[in-house]
Every structure is written in structure tokens, then in C-alpha cells.
Image 1 (cartoon, one colour):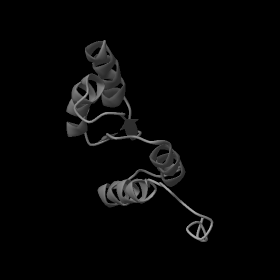
Image 2 (cartoon, one colour):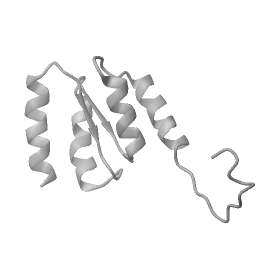
Image 3 (cartoon, helix red, strand yellow):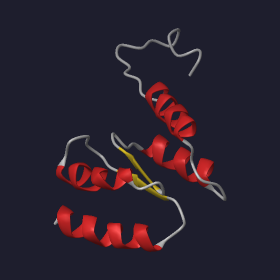
Image 4 (tube, helix red, strand yellow):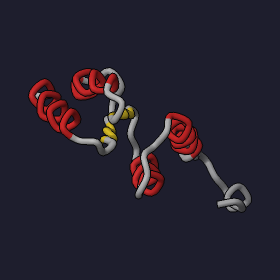
Length: 97
């Protein structure tokens, strides 16, 4: 139950001085809706639209330091840039790949 998980993370966040970064898959989904309420806390940052690139970048960027809002926005932009669609490629088309 997302509400139960919210209560558990809320307790942890209130007791901790460490930053808590939450990655949710779907913006507006039940987990995101419940956990986004935690973003009012200074030590909690909630992302939505999580993909593997974003998850890896968040981990690497936050090693030993807290993420700032500017960092988070940069990570979102990088995750967007990593998304592509390919269709009907020929050997000429994939020179950059």
C-alpha cells in the first residue's frame, strides 16, 4: 500500500539528516502521489518518470553529496536526451551510433 510506504519513509526522513532521493516510475501514479507529499521536507527529493539512465546518474551524482535542485534538473535533461526512437535505419544512418 503506497500510503503505508509513505508513513514508513516519512518516519525515516524525519529522523534522518541524510538526503532521501525517491525515484518513481509514473508521474501521478499511486506511489508517486503518496510519496510526493514527502517533498515538503528539506531532505527529500522525489523524481518521476524514472528510467535506468536517470537512476544511474542520480546514484553517481549523489555519491558523498546531496543533490541540489539545479543538479536534479540537469539529471532530468540528461535522461530526456538519452531517449530516442529509431526506425528504418540503413548502414549510412548509423554512422554516429
